[in-house]
Length: 122
Image 1 (cartoon, rainbow, N blue to C red):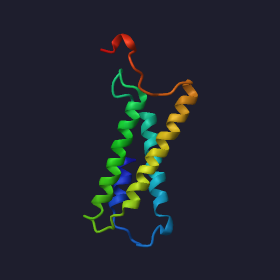
Image 2: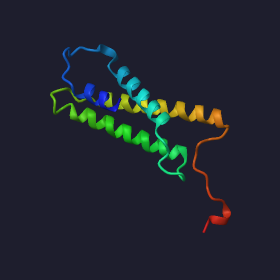
Image 3: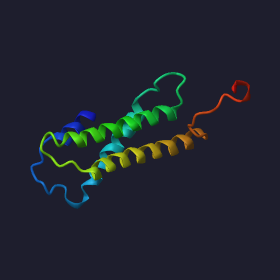
């Protein structure tokens, strides 16, 4: 899926008016779906990681990937548009927000980092 997005980001466009005025919608949808799939299939980075820490790391990685794909379009003769990079990030953010709500609803708790408590505050 990641390779497919990279390919579609870098292949020359046969019609410069495609997909028209709603160009950012496919960007947001593609990155939302990619984020959701990766959140579902990737294991935590370690047994001590909180789910939220892994999700944030994944989200930041995909935002960086999307931005680099947008910059790489200059090399293949396509237009570099900051609106596309923003749409990519919005898609990642929407998927993370849905993941957070679903996880909180399913577990009854927030997937946030917890402190060790007063005994460990030194």
